[in-house]
Image 1 (tube, helix red, strand yellow):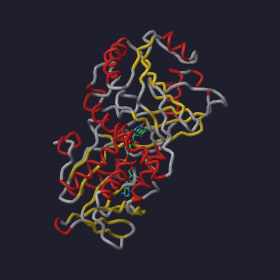
Image 2 (cartoon, helix red, strand yellow):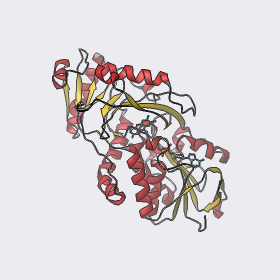
Image 3 (cartoon, rainbow, N blue to C red):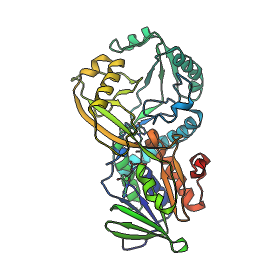
Image 4 (cartoon, rainbow, N blue to C red):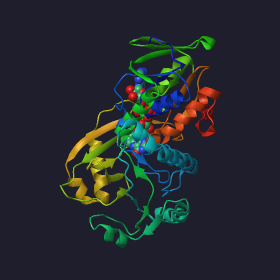
Length: 381
Ligand SMILES: Cc1cc2nc3c(=O)[nH]c(=O)nc-3n(C[C@H](O)[C@H](O)[C@H](O)COP(=O)(O)OP(=O)(O)OC[C@H]3O[C@@H](n4cnc5c(N)ncnc54)[C@H](O)[C@@H]3O)c2cc1C
């Protein structure tokens, strides 16, 4: 609070920290404010799957309405952005691990997308050659071949596809590592709950908090699904809403293997923590973060659909958090007033998107607009 920073970033999730890191690398002095410890919200609890291709089970559901039945891939616009984000992750991961000293637990196990209809198999066939050409070797396989991989898997007559390239990281280590990267270039991380933002044009911005106020040249609102309520008093409307997602972590018996990530009605995957994650539900219930028995039951049913054994393993963690969701499942990066910018809307892919978003925030603060029109606030009219 003592020296006036160039930029105050509100939110120490992956969007806020990736933005702060980028801004500081570009020579700005930056303070990040968060009301809670790093990783308290979705950034610390996400499944951590970096997949530029498959729709997966973590979409907010808002994209479903425009897709034909059985469409297993992300819509084209999302595949493009997710691929760019994926490449940036691959490039920066060694640097992030080196600076932070944290293991991101990169895990390159293949994904077995199970098919439940002829339409899904047809889409699989349509994408297999294309994804293979892009460097993501994809093979269509029959139900018998799936059982040959592991007889515990439950299949249908439609078989599945093995997709190689999408991978997992540990979200909590990742968000903590981003905090360390930001600190390494001088970013100050402070605990405060932001209550209001005042934009005084040429005079800069005042950020009011429960710890006093901060003066800055500009502000990045990266407060996840809480971003709209911070910018609405400035006359800005940003269509980001909380989309609740619940995850179970199961403890398989000692020595029990799990050969690959199963993707069907949900994700079923053994992560490097040794636990099998069942992810995730989607519910539009406002800001109620209570884990529910209903979600737990649904996730266990999903798990059973793909691998009956897993549904009997003890649940050692049941978590719930919010995807900051937008109507088209793409982030929002843009100016809401002269000196106040928003960076939110990661939806179910925000761990993937955040490094690209950070790069765009860097350009936004320098040029007033993000380079990627797909992220523009103006797209919502
Ligand atoms: C169940 C689930 C699974 C997911 N799995 C994946 C996945 O596999 N791959 C993937 O890429 N993405 C995944 N995601 C999405 C990803 O977690 C989010 O898109 C991303 O973490 C959002 O980051 P964020 O920084 O925008 O928001 P958040 O992580 O929500 O951070 C916002 C921060 O703002 C702070 N804040 C809010 N209001 C205030 C205030 N007034 N004052 C001060 N601080 C404030 C909060 O405390 C919080 O720390 C998943 C999400 C869910 C829910």
